[in-house]
Image (cartoon, rainbow, N blue to C red; front, side, top):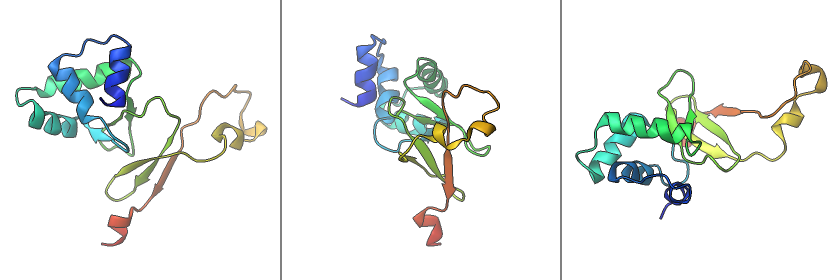
Length: 138
């Protein structure tokens, strides 16, 4: 059973066949699918699943904090099931592939006191950008 499926079971979330398939599609490392990609993969497992059901399920998973919605540069939103492990993202500027990265150090500590403008910092989101090996080889 996937980490996401287990977390959903532990919280008592009703796992219908449709919800289970969406959670199964989101299983794995470095998963950052768009809703349409989730739907396409879900249809392979459960042909009758509708696009609306996939969108609604993704919305529910985001609202309960089990999936993170990732937006990069105006591209389609992507869904990251790695919601309970601190990480940042590395994004290819050409193809949009996303990888989870865990930089060492505290990103909050990198902002000097004079640049905080009195804010009590609670989190930092860092997105690293570059060209992936596949795009660099083209």
